[in-house]
Image (cartoon, rainbow, N blue to C red):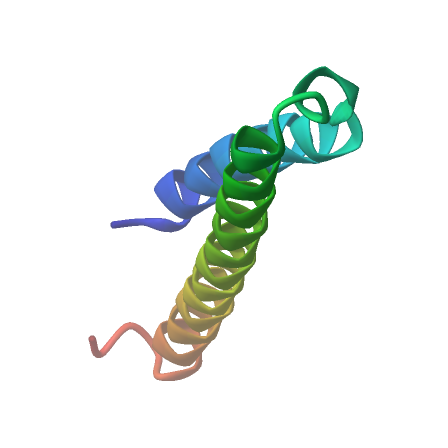
Amino acid sequence: MNKEIAQYINSLLAERERLMEERKDDNNQWQGIPELYSDLKKDTEWELSMIYQAQKSMDYFEEESDDLFIDINNTGGKY
């Protein structure tokens, strides 16, 4: 995986996060059915936490890619 792929994945995660936040905010449609509302709320919160962890991983990968590029350039192209 390269930096561009990590950035693309991050953009997909950001879009999914936006959709989950909308779903979280638009809870009026589910409040009439308590079981569905509770399940949806739990699922949304879980998915938002997974998105956050995945975004952190992609950010770390992007930083590591930058560091690797800098190290290679500082070695005079030996790698």
